[in-house]
Length: 336
Image 1 (cartoon, rainbow, N blue to C red):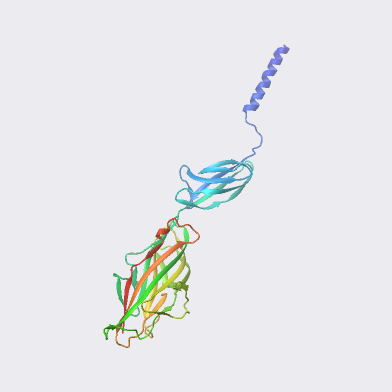
Image 2: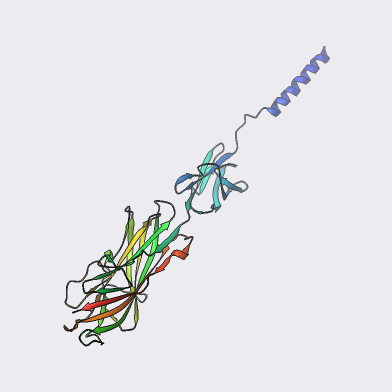
């Protein structure tokens, strides 16, 4: 009888040991969880499946290297940060929110990698870039008169996440070359009766952008320069010397919306004669040609415009389309 009891007791002991081994413990959980997610252009991403991405979680335990999003990682309690992010092809990392988290035992925290589509600033010429008095010039020469306004148009934009804004630094140049003065009465080239001048106005409305449908184009600053040196409206007039190229430029900084095609217009100068008519509005410069004392005549100028832009504090994936230049326009100004 005692032997039988002993056998039963041994069976019970073995059963208790086996239950202790195979039944999960009810003790406290000592780890936490970090979920790494991602957005692209502000939207949850990827929408299906997983996306290849590289990142490292660093904290009190061994570093954890992740290769996909979304992903869930078991971590020791404490402060963890995310870094060494490798963006998938065609994107760049804009931010990590939050960049670090403090995880308690049995707690889940989320870290989000915010990606944007790669940005590409571009500029181009419309079929007819030159205008006079807002009318397109159809050829490579134009017969102008005092009171005319000469303008250049460019097409531009920034590819990337739709509706996102971006800061752009833009510089546009105008080469003006005073060739000669032809006197109609004498039928010959002569020196003009006075200096040909450029007055500096730098009207803010002289440089503008439009888009269809309308989109934000916020101008932050605008400066004019002569041969690379800043020149302000209170400066002395610029005297144009025959057969010498003069380079004017205007530098502007804008906040634009990505994925919008803008038409940029620059009213480079109005044309006038001393004491004749009112100064032009919305121009960068005023081209003043002397009177011909009633003899009649024509001033000949050559113009060439160019433009460049760059993203401010952002990487441009293709800088090969950031510059453009017009062909030469022969401008003939007929005077009384």
